[in-house]
Length: 451
Length: 98
Image (cartoon, rainbow over all chains, first blue to last red):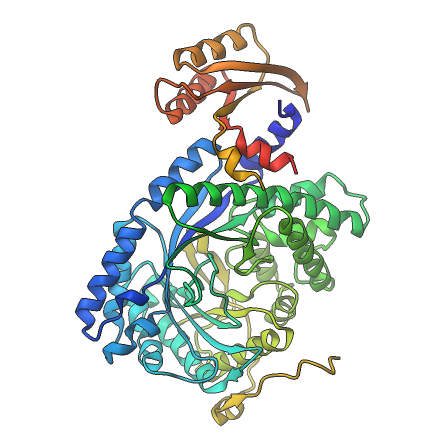
């Protein structure tokens, strides 16, 4: 029989340390829904999503009950809509509406894939889609959008960075009544991955099968609690403790994914090894870093501790599951992490430090509230900086910043729930307009002679 | 990874946590019998200052849905001032075995 100690440990992790499965995300290809007639295409999209995903929530809840572990989100990701809508030659907003309706009808809380991949330039449908993002996000509730503006192999599309600066701003402006929430559903990527189960950046890549189940685990609280038992461990031991804990967390993700895949009759894709925080007490990545020995997250030493955490989580998780993918690393979304919120409020955590942190972990400048009067060019420059980190380091980076329209440093935006709340963080005042307006493509980096 | 084999396992762990009292085992076992869940193994101990009893039960011949047993045991636990968690044994196996 399983040891009593092990049984109690599992129960404690779930009951007291916020161990949960963050998301089961079903990826659905919409390539067979392409049609020059937009109404017919949208109809096909709605039908395909509601057919494939009709049992997703029920199966998720069944598994939750049987294993006694919460599965917080059941979500969908679809083929980047720019590919599906290209043949229509008009604004793709009706696709967003069809996705939103389908998501509501199958009862999932978010659907990702209102996306375009423009790392090397805009093809048919890309510009229409990008320009329609602010409207699409303001007239829908559950649709999430992402745009890939750069990659290690192609370099960075600076025109796309510039455009996205203004799209983020418009998305916030069009949703002022909802605390600028439109911008919180929009991610700008460099090296976007095709099997990411986490929102808002999930989309179902064209290299993926027709339908697939991907799982995102969680568990910052469990890692912190494990570390708290060894206050005098040296840093190598800390790494080992994180690895062991990550192994256990990931095994649950693998089990849930296997069960869901079998019951839904859909192949199991990957487990995303990200440690995803929530604003709930005891579910913070920042608090893990503080447990390792920082007075507050954001101070000197944050990048090193985060690098260790990120690496150990992956090492532990790799052995625990059959296939790893997605973003896989520690997430540092400011508004979604109680420790990050505190650190940003106290001023210890700055956007510059966050940028440094993104060089060693997944995924990027995430859920950061910036002053409402930030110019589109400054937002574009933030995107370009972050994309450069991803491009040079061959990793995924992303920007999800929310301009708090009408608000200044010292004020806050509050969305509640998993999205949390965030203080407006100060940015540099000097302009980067000339750089951004040069346009063109930042060439791909050299992959030898590395220093 | 023998995940596939494990999915056909049909045993659950009933974990009772709280303050010791007379008749806990009897009550939990009776409730399991009501649902036709066969008790295979019982272990009892005091760990980290809490009383803990864990039971391994066969749920392959339940006379109703597993979720009904989960809810009923949990409600009975609350009425006795105890926490009772009933979970499929797979979750413990995957977490604690390589």
